[in-house]
Length: 119
Image (tube, rainbow, N blue to C red; front, side, top):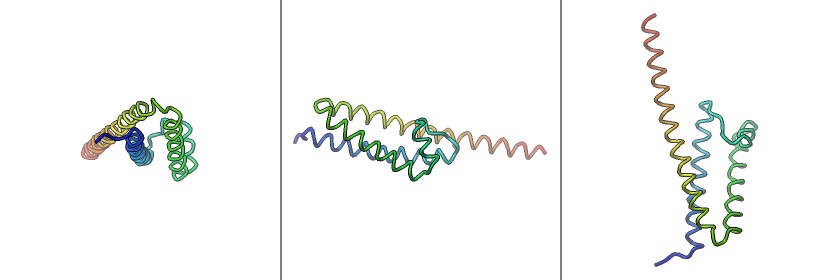
């Protein structure tokens, strides 16, 4: 059974929204660790309120995806798949960054313990 193009786009769009949600969750976590948002507009909005950051991020993303899907027509699926790959890469980067942060924090704590032991 072959899916219609619109149905395929719907599944891709649902995945994109899931990835956007995960990106927002990871972003809020790393902001609490002192990391800044790469997008200066969203970083400014986060400075106002984390809640407003979430609303603006989701609203901007939803409108952008809808515009792409409606106006690109024949090429919309290719563009949506490309965005899916980009967002997946962003999520991989978040996971890698969190692992690196844990490793660095562990090394800093181990170093602090050895310094305290010398005193």
